[in-house]
Length: 182
Image (cartoon, rainbow, N blue to C red; front, side, top):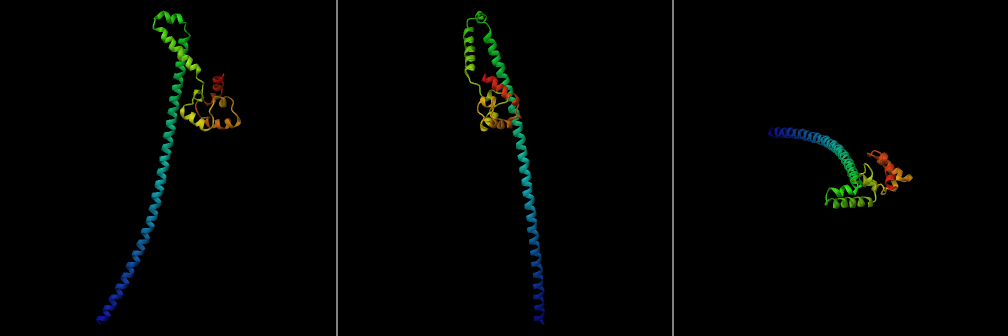
């Protein structure tokens, strides 16, 4: 009888072990499914974060370029004002400058030297309104390196120039280039 009882106990234990094994396998499968679902969620979150970062970078770059254009336009205006002031002071009669004081002669000479140096410089694409260092680099990358190309564009050059239509002052570039070349 002890043998029967021991045999029944072993059978019960074997059955219980099989039930436990099935539960463990089921739990393992559930855990693997949850890992797959969580991995997909992490990947989706990573993609969403990367897109958000890319959007923020694009906005920041746009704001930077806008500020740069504003600063470049202000700089260009100040240069034009400075040149106008130099030309105005250089066009005043020398007698009135000489009458003021003796040290005025070196100032007139310095202004004339500056004016001569400015007149000797050949205008470049950077001389156009709205063309700062960034735009100049982009123009050069597009193969546009001279005012002649802008003043008298070929079909290919005109096609390359179309990408700059949104740059401030673009509509007047051709007229400005022709004026600077004259």
